[in-house]
Amino acid sequence: MKALAWALLLAAGISASAQAGSATGSDWAVTQRYAVGGEGGWDYLTLDPASHRLFIARDDRVMVVDAHSGKLLAQIPGMRHAHGIALLPAQRRGYVSNGHGDDVSVIDLDALKVVGRIAVSGKDPDAIIADPANGHVLAMDARSNSISVIDPVAGKELASIAVPGNPEFAVTDGHGNLFVNLEDKGQLVHVDLKAGKVADVWPLAGCEGPTGLAYDLAAQRLFSVCDNRVMLVVDARDGHPVAKLPIGKGPDAAAYDAARHLVLSSNGDGSLTVVRQRDADHYDVVANVPTQKSARTMALDPQTHEVYLVAAKSAARGKPVEGFEVLVAAGK
Image 1 (cartoon, helix red, strand yellow):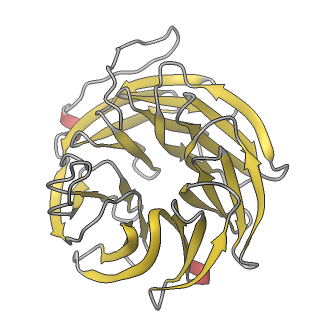
Image 2 (cartoon, rainbow, N blue to C red; image 1 turned 180 degrees about the vertical axis):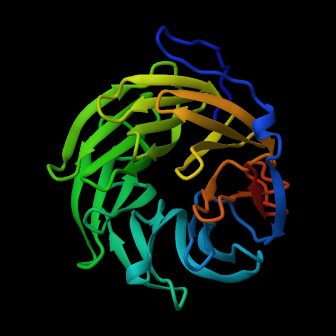
């Protein structure tokens, strides 16, 4: 992540409050640390709540960790700069984006091994998610400004959707609508998956380098986290901004806990920003939880409400990774 200065600018009509570390968030803390080790960089992690397994993209492999005990269950080899993992638990399959392979590895969730590969036409597939509306898998192709639509049953790419910028993380509403952060443009794109094209492009005013993205389906609110230490809350119906909040530096993931009305941002500076949702348009920062430098990605367990992050004690660019850990954060 680039280190960008944060300017505290609240546009007219945008409401936000930022009492970081207030009493309502003071009990948040890292409660567990699991030393899992291993060489190589990392990117996204994904949790399967049913099996309590964490799938962690580790460059040339996927690490599988028991989320309850921290035990390393398996390492699935054969990846080529793995970025993310999308899970289809009902089909017992997972899909891993390979940035240097321009393909997606298919893994068996029971045998924990690669059982196939699906080539994509885009370059450098990065973030990858499952679309519950039709069972398709969607890969964000970072270097070709496109989205690969994959049919997991047929085992092939069905279509490639062009977007006007570098796609970062994405979320779907389960009803044929996809929302994608464009990191290089500071924009949010609404894609009509049924039509297979971009429906809307919305500016993220005051957001530089949007990365992580989360969605509140009930309130139809999108949460984009930005490299200049802000979170923007956007109405998913028309793209208008409703709130701007300060977060930590170097975010790379966002999550929404629907049961507890909390929005989370994992930040590479070693903090987890916790935002409480009062209603659809009003939010308060209630905690900036100390985690560990480099803990920029996370996975939320919707059942236990615990947050899993990964970090290393030494993760300088071009040097071996040392002390790779899974961190568990929890609070009210």
